[in-house]
Every structure is written in C-alpha cells, then in structure tokens.
Image 1 (cartoon, rainbow, N blue to C red):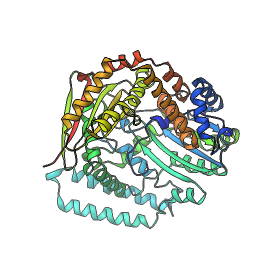
Image 2: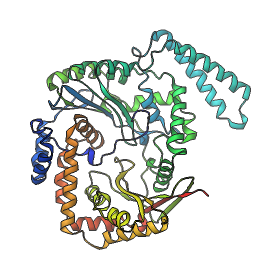
Image 3: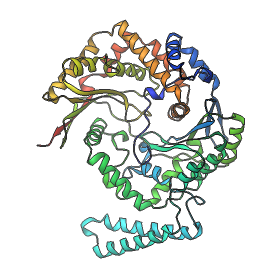
Image 4: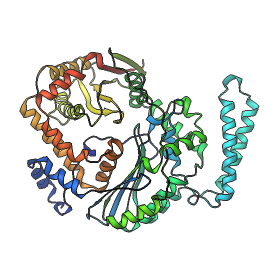
Length: 517
C-alpha cells in the first residue's frame, strides 16, 4: 500500500478467470458461482485467454488490455520487475523509499519553478551527503560539523518548500475522478495502480510516462525519516513484524529474501540519492515494465495513447546485482524473540516457486490445513482442542521469483503453551506425510479454490492486478488461465509426495515470540 512495505501476494484473490460481463448482475453472482463450479475449468480459462490483447512496444514495454464494459472506468496497473531483492548489499530499503519518492512529482509536476528548484536540489544533495558521511564516522564524527551541516540542510529545505506544490500527482488524479491511487513494494515487484474514468486514459499516460522519465526526488531526507518511523511502527513496535523479520532472517541465510523490504535500520539511515537514482535507471526501464488495463476501453485507441507517451522512452540495459542461491537446508533452525506481547509462532519450510508443479500442491495443502472452518488445523486446534487462538497457513513467503517458504502462523490459546501448540501442529503435518488425503476432502478443497478463483472476478482492478502480476513475475499472464486446470490434475498421491519431500524436520525453521517478563 501507499506508504507501506506491503507487497501484493498471489494468493486466491490473485488468481481468477474472466467471465463475459453480460453474466454479471447483482442477483446472478451466486448462480454464476454454482454454475462455474460445475463447468470444466478450461472453458472459462479459454474465455480469458481469448479476450486479453497483448502488445510489446519497440522499447520492450509489455501492455495487456481487456475490454470489460461493466462501468465507464478503467483499472490500470504498472508493475516493474524490481523489488527489494534487486537492491545492493548495504542499500536495503531503497526500493521502498523510491516508491515514496515517485509521488513527489516530476520536472513539470509538483514545482512552481523547476529551474530554480534544480539548483537547490543539487545543493541539498551535496549537504545531505556530507552530513551522512560525517554521522557515519560514529565516535570519530565532529559534532560542530554535524550541527553546521544540519542547519544548512534545514535552511535549504525551507527554501525548497516555497517552490514545491505538495501532492500534485494526487490532486491531478482526484480532480479528474480517479480513485484507488496506490502503490506497493515487495521483494519481487514494485506496483503503481489507479482506477480512472474511461475518458482520462491520456491524462494517466502523461503523468505516468513523465514519472518514468523525469521523476524528481523532492524532500528526500524528510521522506527518509518518514520510512524510518514506518519501520519503528511496523517492526520495532509490532510483535507480528518483529517475529516475521526474525523468521525470514533465520529461514534464509544467503538469499536476499532474508532482508526486510523496509530495509535494515543501519542501511535506511544512510540511503542516498545517488544510489537511488542508479537503482531507478537500472530497474525502472520500459523493458522491465508491464502495464495492464481492464475496463471500458477501446484497445486500438488505448494502444495509440500508450505508444505516444511510453513508446518514445528508450529501453535500458537491465542491470541488477547477482542473486546468491540459498543453499539446501540440512537441519532445523530455531529463533526466539523476546517481546512484550502474547506468544506466537511461525513454522515454515523451503519449497519451489511457481510455476513448478509443487507450488500448486502447496496451494492445496494451504487450503487443507487452514482454509475455512472445516480445515484440519482450524477444526482440530481451534474448535475442538482449543489449543490455538488463531492459525493460518500461507504458501509463497516472502516472494515468488525464487524458491520460497510454506509457512504456518499460530497463536496459542491461554493457558496452553507454544510447545503444546507446536506438538499439535507437528502431529497434523505428520498425518499429512503419512496418510493420503481422502478423495472427498480433495474434491472439497478443489471446489474451495475454484470458488475463490471466481470471486476475484468482480472488479476490474482485481483482474488487472492478476494479469500484470503474473506477466511481470513469470513472463506470461496465461498462468492464471491454466491455474484451475493444474489444480484439477492434482491427486491425493501428489499431495502425499509433496508433504514427504518438503514438510520434513530438516527443512524446517521455527520462530517463536516469548512474552517479556
């Protein structure tokens, strides 16, 4: 979300087919859901594949369009295949801070006099860089110099404020009827999204093409303080964030998935404009970009607009740091976090990413264990034995470009302990490894997945999000058209083999949060 490090996951809401808009009425949704559950999956997957129009501009930008005349609006997603995983060591948090900075405007948006402001921007960067370098010396830093540079930086920022028009991108969109202006940064991708009136596509193109070419990193140092405060609220002061961060740092010892999207504090404190500019130029290139447009549009007209504004942006040679492969885990890892909060735990296992078949199997396992009130862990541990207050499985943490994790989040119910809850979860995992899932349970879960899949059809934004996500992540949006067919092929033996292969003690990481006494 805007001003957060949350990332768009690809779970059920991110996997849905397209159904002709004529079928959508307020009174027909339930009937449609029941009808499609009875239809072979390829029928509505074929419909989606046929309706999506795809184009690749000469500079490599990929455009997906789908006419859907439900309302006179268009949902648009821009996704860059660039996230926290692409940052250099020592520069963690750059991708997320860049997301913030992209709302500060351009050379023509957000300024009263860019020629005058440009001189101040250069001076602000010089003084800010000098101040950071002196602070980084630690005990050897000269306090009088730090104070003098800090005063200079404040004075320059005050001068700049007189030349800035704050939040002008937001204003331009809102005054023209746009809603849902938002952004997110994840490990794998960075996303910008908005829903606009159908007759405002050209306005969107002018704004976003300008941001892709001429962003201005205004208020850099004050915004850096904002994200530092965000980290304090979302991680340092939040038990969920603290435990999750510690878990990932233990589960991955080499791969950059171990690093938080928000960044490590010592890196965030000294993030600089020079590296951010380099990261932007290297990664936010048209040949690293996917745009999806869904709604009341004419594809031929929309294509001309996109070519007019984005087609003239030159492609870049894509440069990203080498990604260290995570070595095979050969023994259980444990990490304990002491925090003034109620106990909770995360248990997770390494597994392959999509589109490897095992990833589909773990979507099924996720549903078997915790999807709905009749799922195994919820029914046994929450309802019957009352060992858990909450329990939830999730497939694909923290990203999906590289091998990732299948995880279980759990909170014990007082007076039960973390140890009791872990033993109970272990028994259910072992049951999954030992006993084949029944055919009736398998079919029930498949129906749940199909139903969730179809529920994602009720918004243009949901469909634009899915199309752009899989096109950017996997290089082919057709993953969503083939998804239910892949689920349909899964057998009880497939699930048994996946559990035996990956849900093993040697492949497990356990993180526990212990209440501070």
